[in-house]
Length: 191
Image 1 (cartoon, rainbow, N blue to C red):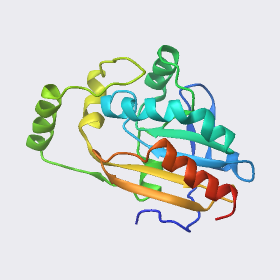
Image 2: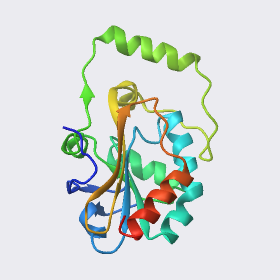
Image 3: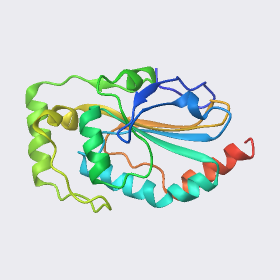
């Protein structure tokens, strides 16, 4: 079951590419939190969304919110990304998809032919523009990059209640920074 508006947000604590561990409960009572489940830096479309969110990050912070990105990236690979790219928000590692599953996001199994067709489509596609440059995934990252897993985008208020929920198969756009700011303003006003 996917997390919906009005529910309490499931807790998690995950290693961060920037060092240490970060948990959702670290923000309870202090700030709203945007929790974004994504493939991470190895995905060109996710880097494009990361760029959008990085450009809005100072406004989100000014509205009393933190943004945390949850990826299936291993901690070692995440540290290399954090050293190479100026990721302004916590880049968390969930390589076993434990938080994903706790939030009701699916990781579907497909036949090898499905993965092969995704790989070939990706080779032909023009990557979208982003502010983080390019990176080639390690061979070991390809299965997670090609996986049929859900993207999730949630806004949690200071009390730990989900106030905005979007989960969908990859390919869906995240909300615009203006939409996110409006949702955060409603969280601040108690709406």
